[in-house]
Amino acid sequence: MDEAMLHEQWRRLRAWLDEVEGLRYAERPVGLGEWTVADLVAHLGLGIGMLTEITPAEEGTEPMSLRRYVGHYPPAAEAIAATTRDLAAELRDDLLGGLDRIAADAFAAIEGVGWPVVLGRRGPLSYPDYLQTRLLELVVHGDDLARAVPESGSTPVLDEAVASVAASLATAYEEVAGRRPGIGPDALGWVRLAAGRVVSEDPHLPLL
Image (cartoon, rainbow, N blue to C red; front, side, top):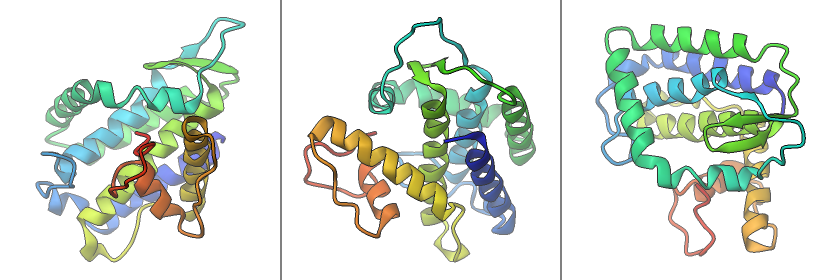
């Protein structure tokens, strides 16, 4: 995973918000508790903005797996929601403009980064895996937005980004289940299962 795919997925998602006039649906629920479209858009800014926070880990630091890293998300859900609400309130008068400023700062911050292991909010992670966590956020929540606004008739997630995230979540599943999941041709369907957007009887799911 490199910066190029992350940047391309971000550009597609941002363009989609303009194409469908996403903020016309600002108060519409997205199926994640009380979160609305506007809340989720602010959360996307929060997620991509975390690129400005990473620092190089000390030499010799052992990175955790992507599975362990994202496994810290559920316990932090309340804090993440509170931070998202704060950002949504801060950007209330110019949500999309604020999103653009956050993204510009984020991508500028990682230009030329060559650190093998970085420190994120949940611990040390290889730099490519950290970028993958940001791509995961864009794919999962981009799909959330598309499902919340079905009348748009389009999706903000790129096929190659979905395939990349599906593969990383399959590896995460294998880490906890001891076997590779059968994804088949429906990569997005697997992402929805792994992210808990579709109910599964598999005891190893969801992964997030």
